[in-house]
Image (cartoon, rainbow over the protein chains, first blue to last red):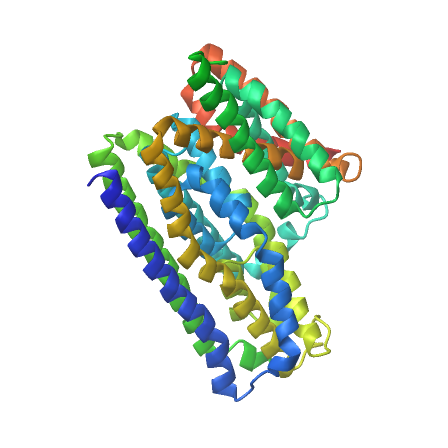
Length: 226
Length: 234
């Protein structure tokens, strides 16, 4: 199966399975209301639904456009079903890329992203189930005041090592990433919504590579940094 | 009320959806494994690295999600939070969605404070609001992927360059969002990030000298645990 055939299968299966799960998700509140004959007043709840959509929507273009080269379509279909795209699925993918030495936007990278994200999804689903089953014995650990800072800072701690590993991949990464970090930091100081900070930084990152790695070498015949 | 929101049929309904997710993931992973092995000629040990990485990276960051689950269960019963946090939901997003739902009918989210009207509103707002993400992924991923495919036909180097640029942008954003923006407010978070980053630098440099690939494989897990430890100490 070549890259094109595999991608075609991924889209067909990803779209159809996502749609089935969407229908099941929507069916849950409908079934609840039908069983108990307890329908909500839609005039009252629509602002709540809109609030949730508006909270999520700014992230969609940034995540899909920005993460597509790294995660590929398959891992994105998987990740959108279980959520936590930035906090869990993206680091799982980049960690795998770094460990195996894969380049973004390649067939190998997109294929391995499916395996890494799938494994990550399994872990989340299984741990949540175990959390539900063991809710009583787990409470002293989960609510321990001593361990609280560790749990609430798990994701920043996860990204620290990941960013170090990515930046130190080579001279090029070191030189290209640092100005981008400064740019993102300054952009964040403007108070702009985080979703737009992400989208703009990703676009600027793509432009940086486009100019320094593609346009200039194409015109001059010389590579700036190897 | 407690019996209604913890009804057996609701557990069964949620279990069906969650099994559906696991089946979808399993089918995709099996197909990807075969593609990696047979067509891309990656060996089993490399593919297994991807699998182990996905598992290791996800265990600890799932703990805050379990904490939110256990916080919501006394208020909303078990099936609804279990469903919402297993499908699409994030720890913060679900708490906000539940609160928005309950407040839209004039009630307050708390233990024993919501009626069936409030619970139904929370159920609808959480399910419908978050399902919009699935609607987006179902219809937007394919055209965006095709856009990258079209660029590939123009010049492969262009696509690889843009891919590397997007990744650089993502990492730069993550460095700010999960670390630098916490200076000076939220220094515990910053130190967790910084400690993990510094250990990551040390391990990467040692690894480059000693060529110990296992260090690279477990770098993220080791750095994360170190960062979490520092968060408890500072």
